[in-house]
Image 1 (tube, rainbow, N blue to C red):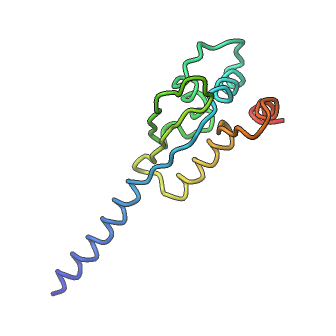
Image 2 (cartoon, rainbow, N blue to C red; image 1 turned 120 degrees about the horizontal axis):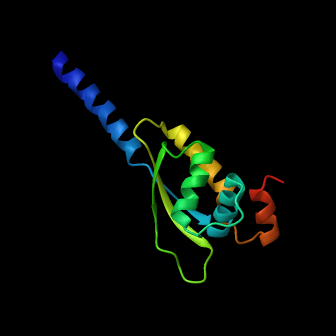
Image 3 (cartoon, rainbow, N blue to C red; image 1 turned 120 degrees about the vertical axis):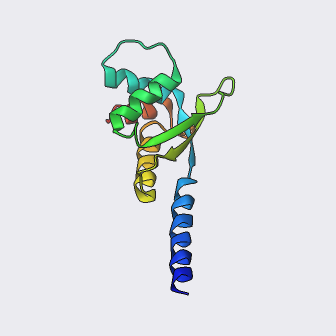
Length: 126
């Protein structure tokens, strides 16, 4: 009987861990803000305009490149918004993942309600 109760507790713990691993969060990221932030980080004059590469540069600067996995959806024509789904790495706790998502969104998130010049200055920390 005690073996069954231990087994039940073990299954509960495993299911809680499995639940945490299935967490993901999709953000609308601004392609132009990502480009501008990557320019600033590298101190460059011009980049190729390759969104996945520029996103990696920003995530590395934020110190979260190894803490998240992500999938980038195809871009809609004539849009600055890119849908990116983030998932935590195996060793990242849910609360830390939420902090990471908030920091990514505040840095390069798409917000169509703000004028372009406000988004530009927000990226540069002004």
